[in-house]
Length: 422
Image (tube, rainbow, N blue to C red; front, side, top):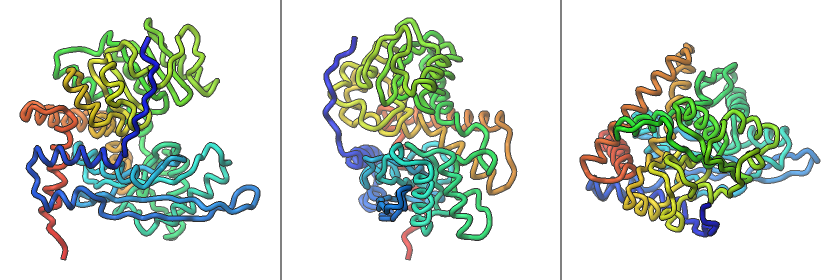
């Protein structure tokens, strides 16, 4: 069984994002002026806003919306509700969205938002009130041609419906394209719910093709059995892979002979966690990273793979369905050990890609079939993987550095071509 040594390292996520950018900028020999422009967000908004609670008391919440760079198009990025949200976290996530949109070459810039709150402690009415007031506070920044929010941690299609309705009420008519990840009934897209996981599986299929292997029979461990993790488990099982471990915020399970994703999902729906699933050993969220497997899919939160546990990871390939799960120090260790990392800005870009499809459909008021959406997603993810893999091979760098080089070069080119105003 994996080591039970706790991981105590929690590096500043904004410093990590800037360090990753610096490495790519060095490889690209980016000029100093462009480095200064791209190393910091273009725009940051902090809001403190009141919400009337169910007991009629008033609570004041703090939220953020950050736009890192919008040279290539409107800002794009999710809104998360979490008690540990910080401005630095939102800055990092906004920067990563710039690179994510650029690496798959969709016409968006990077943005992100967050509210410091534990929504699990609020009633549905309180969450709706918070959402509508937050949407009002950030309304000067957002819009279908300015900045387009989407779901993230602890937000969902209903959250986006409330934001869309609030924004539309301000303007007096329905503006579906202000957010993506909406319910299908009000302008959402088919395939959006599965898009992050499906895109991650497409990158694993590209890895298998590039390395002359197959997903058939590979053992997969998934940290985070939420939307992305659970759907990835199902899709990978359909490709012939065997799910040997899964976890959620309460803990994890490990079964070397394999888990049935559907049964694990049903157990979680009934019990609220995967923990306790029959005929499986109980493991922690840290231990699951170190189980014996071929493919590791971190689909939870940031800073999970660090210099402390990277030497003990047994997987041949790490597919980052989460944002920022690996620290730069861990990256170096994994690279030296020959572990192939499919970086977050490539691996989990399926979500923003289908969000782009949703936005296009909303703007045209013409909706696509799910087959068309999945085919278009596969085409974009394959092309992005090939570009990053070619950059990695040509410059003899790891895949994360290569992905950053592809993305930063595209954003820098757009910024240079537009010039400095005035």
